[in-house]
Image 1 (cartoon, helix red, strand yellow):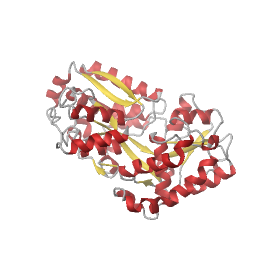
Image 2 (tube, helix red, strand yellow):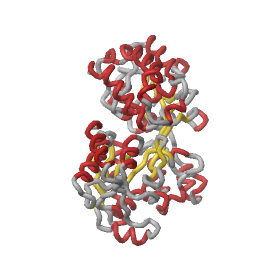
Image 3 (cartoon, rainbow, N blue to C red):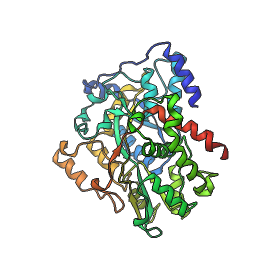
Amino acid sequence: MKTLLLAAMSTLALTGAATAAGPDPAKWESVLADAKGETVYWNAWGGAENINAYVEWAGAEIERRYGVKLVHVKLDDTAKAVGTVVAEKAAGKDAGGTVDLIWINGENFASMKSQGLLLSPGWAESLPNWKYVDIENKPTIRTDFTIPVEGQESPWGMAKLVFFHDSARTEPASMPKSSAELLAWARANPGRFSYPQPPDFIGSSFLKQVLSETVADRSLLLKPVDEASFTDITAPTFALLDELNPLLWRGGKAYPQNYPAMKQLLADSEVDIIFAFNPSEASSAIAAGELPDTVRSFTFPGGTLSNTHFVAIPYNANAKAGALVLADFLISPEAQARKQDPAVWGDPTVLGIAKLPAEDQARFASLDLGVATLGPDELGPALDEPHPSWMERIETEWKRRYGAAN
């Protein structure tokens, strides 16, 4: 999929940028009028029931309030939606596209932005609810995996890599404090850890975590991959993964398909440590009855990956006004507070609480973040996401080394 996508994008590069203008968010009443009666096809990951339920709630709310219908196009890989837009551009379909909004970040955003396949810059920062977004304290809101956002995607949630375990089976004090300690733990507990098979996003994120901890000069990861030095730079990373691989669940001969499958392994006592890109994920799983209430979170004192996830509007979207209305609703205090509730989802807010009206501050203050949610002082430092080219390159190398066994 990625090879075909890159080939198509190379062709598009010769045809010039396709970035298009849309309705002006500064004229919001006009946007609302245009949006009424539109159907927004939101291409978003559909692999978790709680997230799907949240999307369904958001759809019901925007239809009731604004007359905009939402259709959740459930994806297992965001690249499929990107590929649809690429194919439509190649076919000359510069209007009336089938994708109105994409849940996106990282390499997929970089790919679309570089080829001008997104709505014109600036729209996100002109949304009415943008005034509440915490641009002062959350730098990844304006820089997505080192790529300047420039208002071409709207932030929807914050993410930080957090590990968790069942304290009824494993002592908190025995949990590893780095990737190197995780390898040592796996030596002592073979078969009790695994990660989703790349290119699953969570599995690839684990690879990037190991890369970020083992690279000699982390600043190199903020630049595009230099093929000439890739092998030397990543040698410590793959030395660790080479040793870890046979110590994984099922001896590294099989991998969980995705995060929900990995979570089920913990619930079934088949593994003892799993991880997610959400500090409240363990509490959310406890609230949903998916994990026992003895599960606890931990992180690495040296830092774990952190990023923002977004929604973006393709340049040829059919329902641009409706997509703007949905994007704005998703960063409303009401929608953000509901999303941060572990009983609903537990995804951290992109808003600055101090910027909110008193009643909305109280809404956030009343949230019970759950027994397994780490406080801000316990999460440890945030590591920058590498440039998007690193993800694709290490996925390719991972597949070459280990993929044939699956």
